[in-house]
Amino acid sequence: MESELELAVLFEQERPRLLGIAHRILGSSGPMGADDAVQEAWFRLSGTDQEVENLAAWLTTVVSRICLDALRAQNRHDALAAQLAEQVDSHHPGPEEQAQLDDSLSVALLVVLDTLSPAERVAFVLHDLFGSPFEDVAAATGRSTAAARQLASRARRRVRGLGAAEGEQEAEHADDDGGRAPRAGAERRIVEAFLTAAKGGDLGALVKLLDPDVVMTSDAAASAMGSPALKLGRDEVSGFFNGKAKAARFAMLGGEPGLVWQYRGVVQVAFTFQLRGGVIHSVRLIGDREELDRLTA
Image 1 (cartoon, rainbow, N blue to C red):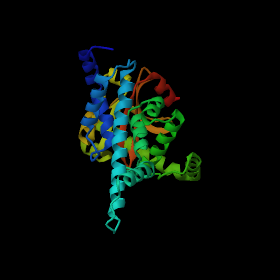
Image 2: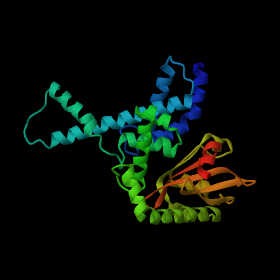
Image 3: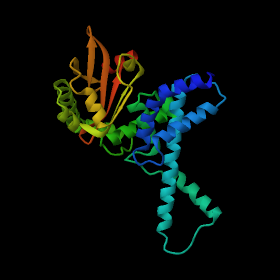
Image 4: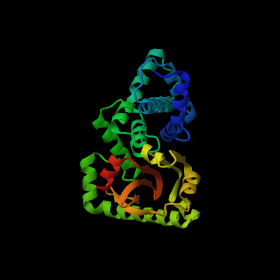
């Protein structure tokens, strides 16, 4: 493994991305701060003896697990406190009874945080916001790759305002009966309005189209072309796009409305969007050739 100085330099290069992941998983009122989660990841990295082949993936997994454990601990504590508060007698559980109660609540009462369970939130943040492969999501959540895909799919449906679907088949039926078409039309109008405002330098219109906590991320390929790795919040994201994107155009990407920038007829960067409540919740810039080919096929 690299020397501690070399390791520190590599870690600092990853810090902005890790802070973005931790911030989105924990939320603004989470059980710990994003800075604390990332610092804990540094302590674990500097103290490990194992050979880390893919530092970015390793740190993604560690930070996600730290945040996931913190959310689970908070949910268990809050649920236990609420249950005890409802008791009208003066009974106080002993250590053994407390431990049994704690175990029973650890899974059953992992309540949703901002509509998502901790595992769903990790899956959504890692895959949909930061473009991590499902193998990394599986490692972070301790589940199989197939289960990680299901987590992300369920989280995506919740975030898009479709509610908690009972399963993929039910969601497909909802799309078949015409529920998808109006939503797709509304999302397209929002993305087109975003493009118009960005090109025209209409900062006020951009701000109205963005969620206050919007996050913008760029994959490694897009970052190499000059895109910032991370922008957090409405002010940063609107400031970045204001008066720009003049060469971008609207495109359907994987069946969803988005934007592309082309050079000599070849798509170089794709802009994908996640919407919630009629505003843009996240923007992702993609330059990876394999993913671009998949999105634009």
